[in-house]
Length: 141
Image 1 (cartoon, rainbow, N blue to C red):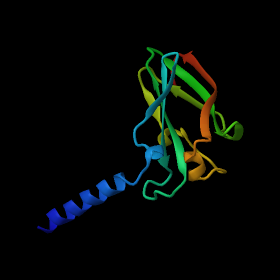
Image 2 (image 1 turned 60 degrees about the horizontal axis):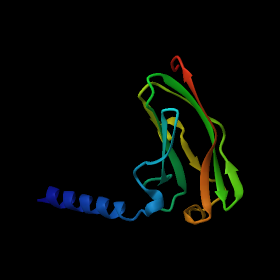
Image 3 (image 1 turned 135 degrees about the vertical axis):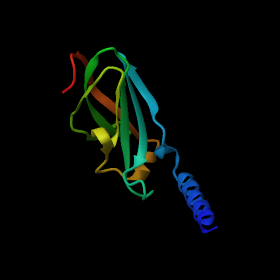
Image 4 (image 1 turned 180 degrees about the vertical axis):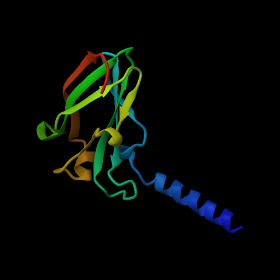
């Protein structure tokens, strides 16, 4: 009986936690663009999944649909209105044929050091991928 109560409470807590996130902290990746057989998707998530007030971070997933490996490089820019607020360092990846790289595991997460969660969730905020380069390569190291 105790196990059933504990299980019910755990499920209830998970459901309640799942409903506290707003749309900007979506769980699923959304397609941003497709270039040369490479699909770029994104999602916003809290940097600490246990703390819904932790800073939001942009996480990318890049999928290579080609029959060859690709080298991908880019910068991420954060804007408030027309003003550039921050730029990431250069991100460089190699993705094998028909594979993908995702978010935190591959260093594809971007957090603002200047903007609050409220500013990121505002209508004025936007982000873009700058200097995107995709090149066919023989393989990845």
